[in-house]
Image (tube, rainbow, N blue to C red; front, side):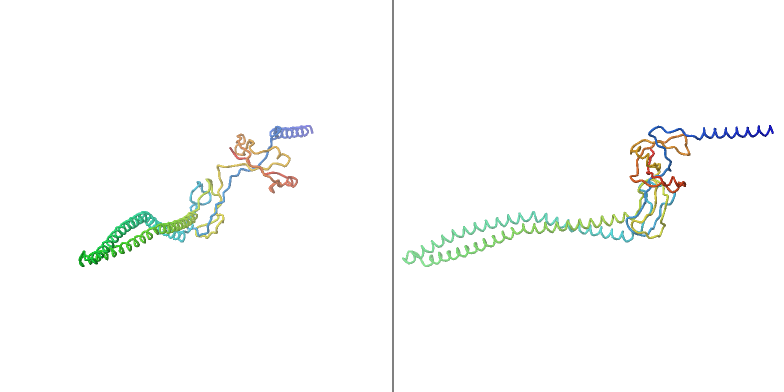
Length: 336
C-alpha cells in the first residue's frame, strides 16, 4: 500500500512537471502595446495572360512550372491571313508613295516653269507692243508721203510712177500694222494663258495633298495590320513562374480568353486577416516582420502595402463557428 501511494505521488509529480514545462515552453510573451500579430500565407502577384485577338495556336513554347522572363514568347497563333494583309498593305504604301513622289516632282517642275512662261509671255507682249509702235510710225509716215505725192501728181510736179510707189508703201505699212496688232493680241493671250499656270499649281497642290492623305491612310492600314500580326505572338507580361496553362497546341481561342497564369516570385507578400477591433492600428507604409515555419528564428522585414476597404467574415477554413462570424480585414505585407 505504501508503494502504491509512492507511485501515485510520483505520477502526479511527473504530470505536474510536464504541464509546467509545456506551459513554460508553449506560452507566448505578450505583445507590446500597439503591435498586432496575425497569421497568413505567402503569396505572389498573379498575372493572367490573355490574347487580344482570336486564332488557332500553332506553337506552344511554355508549360506549367517553367520560369519565364518578361517579354519571353509563350505561344504563337496562326498568321497566314494576317501576313497576307500586311503584304497587301505594304504594296499599297509603296504604290501610294511612288504616286506621291511623282506628283511632288511634277509640282516642283511646274512651280519653276510657270514663272518662266509668264516672264516669256510678258516679254512677248512688250516686244509686240514695240513692233506695233514701229509699224504705226511707218504707217503714219507712209500716209503723209502718199498724200504729199498725190498732191504733187495733180500739179504735175511728180510722175505717176512715184505716186504709185508711195501708195504701195502705204499699203505695205497698213499690212505691217495689222500684222503687228494681231501679234500683240496673240502675245496678250499667251500671257493670259501663262497666268493660268498659278491655277494649275493650286490644282496640283490639292492633288498632292490628296495623295499625302491617301499615303497616310495606307500607312495607317499597314500599321494596323502589323499590330494585329504582332498580337498573334503572346509574350510574358512579367518575370515569374507559370502555375497554370489552360490551352494546348491546335486549339482555337477567342479574344480575351485566359491562357496562362504567372506568379511573380520577386513580389511576394503575406496575406493575412486582422480583426475589426485592431484594424485602426494599421496604415499603409508601416513596417512589419514576417516569421515562417521554415525559419522560425529569422524575421523577414516587410511593409504594409494593402489594407482592404471593406470588412468580411473570417475565412471558411477556420473551423470554430464563433471565430467565423468575426469581422476581419484583409491585409497584405510585401517583403522588402
